[in-house]
Image (cartoon, rainbow, N blue to C red; front, side, top):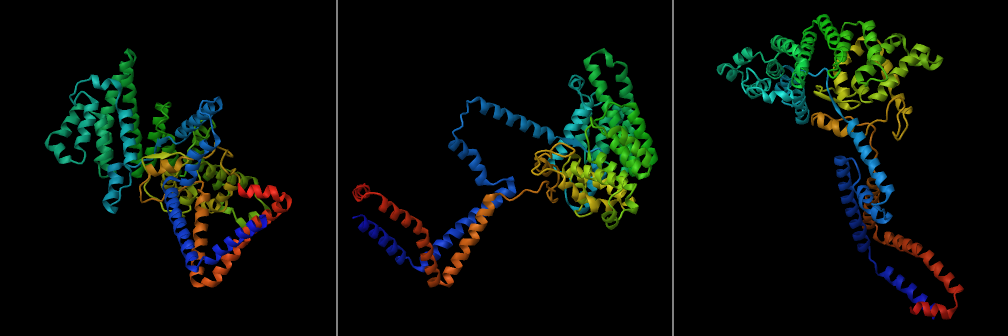
Length: 524
């Protein structure tokens, strides 16, 4: 009886295989190729938009808890969730954006670019951050308690200036400029210089008027700053306004070619207000000193600010690398170095370049002109593409001025990535590279710019799998359509081979089990 059952089963499989026509194989493989192709297209689109695989995300988010049976109330799970929360908080702090110390003038530079090219160099997110910065630096909590008249209330002055930006003729007709002059509102002059001035010369004139008004307000609030919290807040605001004005005046002098004057203004400003590090005036000073080729003074500034306890920046790291490269770059030769090895000075220069590249790996492509530059944003993300653009935009000329510096950078910068652990769970000289830089940079940089991404994201397994499956089934469908008889023979042979282990197991089971027991099992 068992033999009869097995023979019947085997014959039914053979009959099923014999009834399959080549059209069936073409339809089967074509449908499989179409479905896998659609899955591939969707996976690729999802990966390009969100940076992860949809199938993998669904598996991790929904299927793993069901299969693993994780108890949400368990202490281990709560500790894990706390760890995830801490990790997310760390990512947020890592992706904090900073005011670009060398940001351009919106009216005199960014708007001129828009007039010429028709492109918007600034994103809405970036401009919104600038508006928040102005509100933070130029106002205080006590402003709403002051009169609503623009001549008495700086906050109302800002509102008047904002309402009339882009309409200078209305300001003139309505006496708007007269109101500003009478009120001596420094903050309104600042906004007009930033937004309305179409040249650096015009901006400088407005900033000089803002300086006169700002100094008056600063001296007045300085005398009463200890009379209460309200007066202290007003003095803090007036200090921020005054520092901002003097810094922008120094930048105007730098842009107009009066570099030594700009350096003196920056040094005086840093000496007068040493605690106001939020403006990062030392980075403006470094760029101006490099323009003067005062490398000893640059080294003195680096010695003060390139400290382990202070936050780093691309300007600090790459300027330090430039100074060390300058000592050896004019005589550096890759062929000679490969024959005799690196001497001490060359080793120090290479290590400084590796340190700078580890801090921000996006900069070398801009310095070596492997990627085109755009206007820098008003805010940058440290270690991100936005910071790399801001640095290279102003410092590329300084690297070109040092003979052989770019050649040394070209020969050595890629060696940094062999020293950094992969995956980037820990850094070599700095903290691990943050994973959120791409998202933040896309918010800061315009759409027409291709954001530099580090590390390069590998394609998820499911994209590779569906691509292979789609290609394989498409090839089978094509071969079956072209050679139906031959592919039918191959398909039958493949299915027979696939069922061969099952037939072997059934034979072994039949020989081991008693015939009566096997008969009962087959009946079941």
